[in-house]
Structures are given as C-alpha cells and as structure tokens.
Length: 421
Image (cartoon, rainbow, N blue to C red; front, side, top):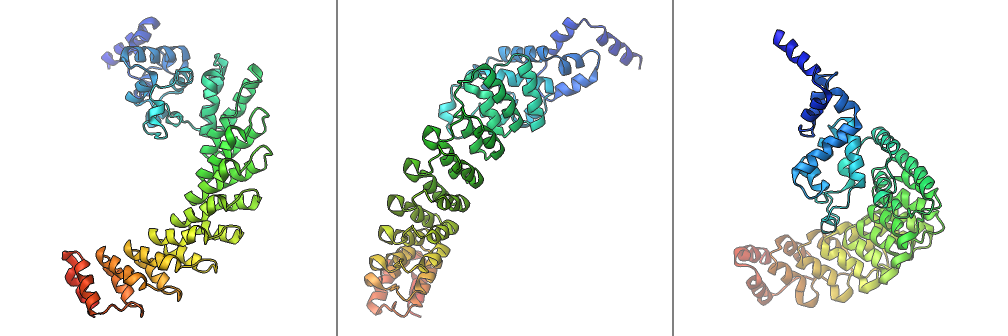
C-alpha cells in the first residue's frame, strides 16, 4: 500500500514537461483511455483535454515511424475503423484535422474502386453523427480551412451522411469563398444513398445536380437509390437521358426495379435505346421485376435483336424470365430454328428447357436433334431425359448409336440407358 501511494505521489509531482515527454512515446491506440483514466491529475489533462498535445503526439509517432505518408502510417497502426473508434475524442479530433489537410495518397489511382485497398477511403474514419459534428466544430474553431484539398471535409461528410456537418461546412465555405465549385460533393452523398444530404445540397445554388454530364442521377441509378433518382428528376438541370440513356440501362442491368419504374414514369427516358438494350440485359441477368416493368411500360420490344431477350434468358438459365417473355405475343421462342431451346440444352439449363417445351411453338428436335446431341455431348443427363419426353424428339436406332458415341466415356452407359428406354 505504501509503495502504491508513493508511486502515485511521484507521478503527480512530475513536471508537466516530463509527463508530456513520457506520454509522447506511447503508441496511439485504445490503451490511451486506460492511461488517461489511471491518473486524472497527471495524464488526463494531456490525453483528454489538450488538442495541442494530441496533435503533437500524433505527429511525433508519424515522424519516427518511417512511413512515407500519413495514410500508410494510419493503416499500419490500425488507426482506422474499430481502432479509430476506440481513441479518445481529443485524439480523433487531432488526427482528423491532420487527415483533412494531408496530401492525397500516391496509390489512390491504382486502388481504384477497391475500397479495402484504398488507404485514404474516408469511411475508415467514420463516426456517429453527433461525434462527427462535435469534432468538426472544434476543428473549425481551431482554424481548419474547410476548402482544403478540394473541400475534402465537405466531400467526406457527404459520403458519411453527416447532414449537420454538411450544413455547418456549407455555411462556412459560403462565408470564405462563395465561388467555390461544389458540384462533386453531391456525388459522394448520392453514391451512399444519403437522401437528406442530397436534399441539403440541392438547396444550394452552387451545387449543379446535372453537372459532370449528369453523373449524379447515373450514379444513383447504378446504386439502386430510387428515392434519390426521383428527387433528382425534380431538378430542371438534371437530364435522365444523358450519356445515351445510361441511367435506365445501368438500372436494368443491375436489377434495380424501383429505379427503372421511376425512370419510366418520368417519361423522358428511352427504354428502346441501343436496340432495346435494357430489356435484353435485364433478361440476360435474370431480373424478372425489371423485365415486367419494361413490358408493362409498353415501349420496349422484347422481340428486338432477333428475340435476343428470350435467347439470353435461355442461355443464362433464367426460367422465370422465360415464363414472363413467353406471355408476350411479340416474342417468338422458335426464333432461329429454335435457338432458345437448343442453347438451353447445350448449356444444361434443364428448367428453361422444360418451360420452353411447354410452348407448342417449340420444336426441340430442330436441326437434326441438335438440342439432344448437344445435351449428350455436354453430359447434361437431366436435359437428355427431359428432351426425350417430347413427342418430336425420337431418334432412330442409328441416331441413338451416334449420340451415345458423342457422350463422354464416363457417362456413356448412362446415356445409352436413357436413350434405349
């Protein structure tokens, strides 16, 4: 007990300069909380109450680390995500201020859209809204220039969905430079689906939602943010048809049914663009909802590209899409001498073969029983059995022998058994 009291007393009597010199060599991690709480008189003032010391501590640790950039240092020392959230408020504030003013990481272009490899991906240092607001307030009071690095603070707040921080920064940016370009900020909010932030940005005349060739609505369509798409459509400068109707094309390709419906409802987009690409690509990717929405709209032609929609759905094995398309009188499932069923058989899509065979327009024996031969050669025994149930598929004895020889040796006896039933 006496030793503990003596140790505590000696710590409390250390000159503040020596205390700071001791603390500055500690690693920056969650242990700082423990250290600060261990001595409210000696350590807590530095760790919990001195922004200047936290900044000095961080800069010292970075300087002695040998890392060429702050981004590599942060990554190596796990000052990100959970490690970041475990730091005292003072350190989060100091470090965030350093991050906002640092030069871009040299490897950012190489990382591209791989956010796990992007060492300066802003969401590594995300925070709850109330804490982010408090930190930004402290930084601004301590002289942070919000326009630094192309409005990085604002762009990152938009990406995180911190609407109150965005409001605060927009006001400060307006006070300091009313001509600053804020067009890119909306893209960060749109990408992550932060509709409240998008609304706030749209209320500022410096933000052009149709800028960069209408990137905002195209990004919202690609990400599937239907409410944001609808909101952007209310802005006169936004053109949903730009870039060859990219918005409806990418929404159809990605299966964002709600976005497709919103775009079709506005009446300005062209769902027949590039020879009905939207319905063809939606069918190819198995997006039933998109296919139904496009057919209901009435402008898309499912028979375009030589009935490309049902052909693509058959090859890729999407029986539900095939069902939808077969109900449309414009679709010809026997196109190209029964290509859909031949392709489905060749690629082993047994459910598609079944659905197609239920349609009286289909002749699965076309092209000298190509479907059966292709299924045998591909080893698709379920397809073989399915095809043989159709009355038109009835190969003679010589054809059967030839087909058996097409099969891989490992399944030849199985094929012979099926054919000779």
